[in-house]
Length: 405
Image 1 (tube, rainbow, N blue to C red):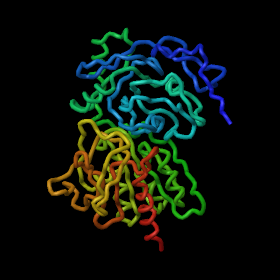
Image 2 (cartoon, rainbow, N blue to C red):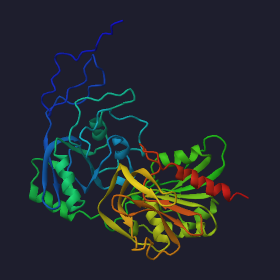
Image 3 (cartoon, helix red, strand yellow):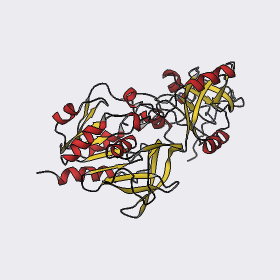
Image 4 (cartoon, rainbow, N blue to C red):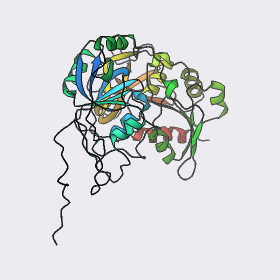
């Protein structure tokens, strides 16, 4: 039987990249956008480098640090990752937005990025799960976007000069005035951004099936998939605010403490140290990721520092020193734990190195030599993947199981 092919209507014209066609009655929501010409805009870095393109989403201007992400998919998860608070994210993969957005792939209630930079914004999206286009999503959430810029040149510039502050603004904006605003914007060093993205009140994610453990999740910008994975392992997860007191935490008598990812400078976050040390000293397992990894390391005496351009993407190789295997990991961080010449953690003799980044040799994982404490710099919950490191949640649950009376 010969199948009839669905042909594009003859009145559609995609020749002008500044114009996106409106929804067509024969194609439904797979064609979405505006019939209005795109407004010229530009991205300005603090060193004066300018990249011209076309605006989409909110009007701007926007201010924040500019970083790049090497993931090919998962742009909605990236947009809603609280760890990107205060940052413009440049996607190195050129085609972003082709499958739209939906109500299921969010890692928080909405976008947390300051701005979004892409090479090519597709004229339409196509997915049975889609509820809106990328542009509709950014516009509704007042996030500034810019397309049709040379993201390859921009990424190479950040790669060689380091992440820096920047702004996206309409082309009519005076460049000298905008540069003054960029230079007056706070640097990422010294910023405690976790409190701005943490939950205001505790909430509970119930276990899937029989409840085996009660885990407290310290929310410094937690992604939704982390409590979900723990719940699937039989944990009732109580997500607590970043400013929770030690007394409040101890009163809940948890079986384990999960210290989440989050944005900003770990050295500016002070609330977690007492809870980490108290619970771990009481033989309660503690597991941290990303910012949580840095906070746990600092609690035991380690120091952190700002990376030149950070690690952002879903394809970072990490060596597990305990198993001598390589994991492909999802990463999003701009700071790292300092490492000594002999692979020791300076200032933290009770911590040992467990994972190393194969790109630059930086610390990717630590464990306490005696207590049930371990942490990794990357994202084992990986939404989207890769899922090479999901075993770490099983390891955490195993620690709690071994301490059951």
